[in-house]
Amino acid sequence: MLLIELTDGTTVHRISNEWLNLEHRWYPHVASLGALKVSCTKIHGGYAKPVFGSLDLLPDLVAGLSYPITIKLTETNEAEATVIFTGTAHRTSEERDSIKYDLYGVDNQHKVTGAAYSGTLVAVFASACTTLGYTLDSSKARTPSPAVSYTSSGEKELLDNLSEMASFFCHGFTIVGTTLALFDMLGDTGSDMLSEFEYFKGSYTDGKPVSAYTSGNFSVDGLHSYGSAESISPACHTVQANVEASLADIKTMFQRRRIALAMPPEAIAPQIGHRLDFIDTSLAESRSISAWISAVVYDFDNHQFTVEGSAVLT
Amino acid sequence: MKVISGNLITAISASSEAPNYPASVLLNNEHPKDYWQSASGINQASLSLMVSSLDTDRVVIKPSSFVPGVSAIFGDDIAIMDDDPANFGDPGSITPAVLSKTGIALFNTNATSAVINISDPNEVIWVDTVLVDTVCESYLIPVRMDLVALGPANAIWAEFDSVPAAVQIDIVLSCDPGESVRCGSPVVGELASYPCPNYGFTRGIVSYSITRELNNGAFWHKRRDDVRSIDNLSFRVTTKGRYSAEEFYRMAMDTRYAPMAWSIIDSDGFEYIVFARFQQKPQVQQINAVHSQINFSLIEVL
Image 1 (cartoon, chains in turn brown, yellow):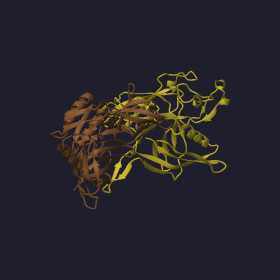
Image 2 (image 1 turned 90 degrees about the vertical axis):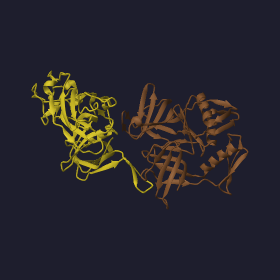
Image 3 (image 1 turned 180 degrees about the vertical axis):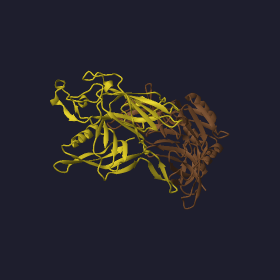
């Protein structure tokens, strides 16, 4: 169930795409909510930044320029709701049958120029979180944490630098509220089982063959003698062994299948970093599948959530 | 077939309210799912509806034999008073008619019993300097319950003789022990009566549920509300008779998409009470020199 709190001054409007009589009454003022996508910047990690579409409200609720907005999901009650977005709804048009808003998330901004990073990845993130005002949750980061040796060029957002370093070391991170959660893409932050009654037709695709993985002055061989080389940039370490170790991890991620799996909203509350385990008996040969979620598309208009990520079929 | 058109409720209060389900949401409420609910576990509570008077055009009195303190009753040979005060008391301005009635309907209630008490709290002085409360005494009205458990249908329907004054309607609702009693969309208004619909109307169910095929071939359902539809409704009226095709047609125009409370009794005596809007607006067919046939269809609202 979709729960949206839209704050107008001191009034909190509780709205949804259907009538909901929970602890509070949620009015069906949402005419349409464009798909919300949370996706890591790269196959092998990076910032899982929310990218939100538009919100169309029926015209009899509010029509102001902008409102703070919180979007939540729940399958039971308000107390169990999970926040998937906090930000601002900004009006784009006022029409006779709807008021349209675009949604904007709020990242803490901090520009850096030629910043030098050293120490472990977790230590680098801890320092950056202090600068950005986030609380770091590194409980799902790799142990031991890989060493970083990287100097960014030019003026950049600190979050962009963090995203590049995280992906180089096959880590991803999410920001929910004031918590930045760093996690190892080769591991998982939790797991969910899907029964055969909890997903629609899946898509399992393969990436293009890669002959070599290169970064900076170093490279590791790909699985194939054909195909093209995959360039990983920037290199976030200067020592050959460290770079090659990271490229080996990235190679592991590239060699996995790609999966896109749509499911009913009430199947699970998909989370970036989680592992999905399920059996697809509809294929010619029944497959046990483990999938690591690196992107989630919340499509409320079509009543489905789609997870994307890497997968192993056995 | 009866329909309550318009809504004369001007204020609503309740003896008990859940924090987020106040009685105030019931005022001018066209959505039965937007309901009032008593506090947790309170299985008996009363709703008080303040109801304005019907249009004075519809004031009913006995034209010549009015007896102070005695109420006119349904079916009495009475009159509709001219709305021009200058003509008041002029027998020529009085048109014979039957006593009009007021209908009460509640929808989406879990009440298993209800008692309705109607009183005139203001004791408004009536046109003949007779206190209204001597005409419309407080009394209990038998309540019929529609127990069709389909969509937001559970409804209460009641009728009382119209009085030319604002009245207070107290409805005591009781549900099963342990539950909180609730209801949505109360309607009080003039009750218009029309002939039973002809044979041939159809009742259907419109489902708003969503169905999609799962990977294994089974189906996933997002279960949402079903509503009732009543199609191919028609009734025949004489062009100059008691039931005016024109009046029904005008009512349909006035209400636009607003839902109304309907009590539809078919030719076999079955009764359906629905809070419905026109799905197909009425078409009046002039079938011969003295008869018209009205065709329309309804769909229940959520």
